[in-house]
Length: 226
Image 1 (cartoon, helix red, strand yellow):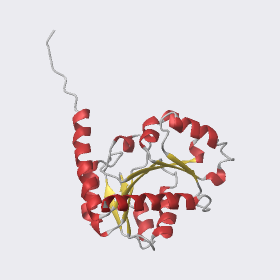
Image 2 (cartoon, rainbow, N blue to C red):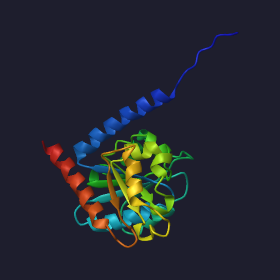
Image 3 (cartoon, rainbow, N blue to C red):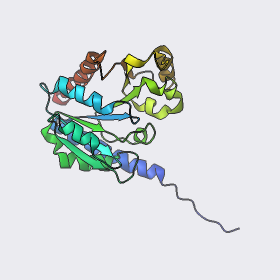
Image 4 (cartoon, rainbow, N blue to C red):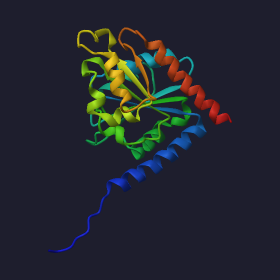
């Protein structure tokens, strides 16, 4: 039998990605720019949540958005209509943003001009969780129609998230979504993530999210000044 070598590339790819992510994080910190990596399934309410969040914070921070999609620009047009600077990134079929894509997007956006930049990542609960993009905060949205069992099915996404927004609580009863069960399922993967139930449509519970985000931004600013 002929001997042959096996070259494992995934570890090197992730190592290269993480190096770029760390450099991006340093650059963003130096310019005072706070980057939120916003992840969720399609239809979870990312764009609706973004619009309400921008409206709540635009008087305090200079805000811009990077929209990532395999193709199309529907969400970017929606954000632009709110008067918010937005950059559309087409990932060429890739199911996630990586650190290099994000670095190039930030450069094209001139991110140093802004206090707060949202990256609306490609919609799925698998690929985006694997790649550090140099964010200041990882935030994921889980909508109640998706079910309270998702932390068991997509463990890495819940493991890496700093804040978990449970969206569409106004219809939770219709979909038999059990928040207590969801919290227990998340705790199996991540015991430090903040879990915030809200409705981006009605505004229920939304102020808690705004308070958490503003607190994280101000905390980052304080650390930069030390």
